[in-house]
Image (cartoon, rainbow, N blue to C red):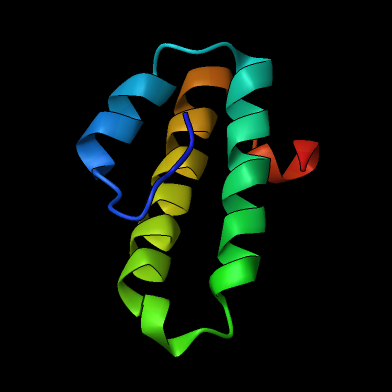
Length: 74
């Protein structure tokens, strides 16, 4: 589930709801790596914002689904 140049939040969220806990954690780690790469690039502000929103959603979804904070696994 690689996030390409255009991130469709609804599609990525629906895909993430179907994967296992271990895969979910890995996807969030990948998101963090992508975010770090984009951090200093002003041209990617829109993608960065979408990744940030996706990360916030993932944290909430993980907490509701598994009852623990995802930060403890990262």
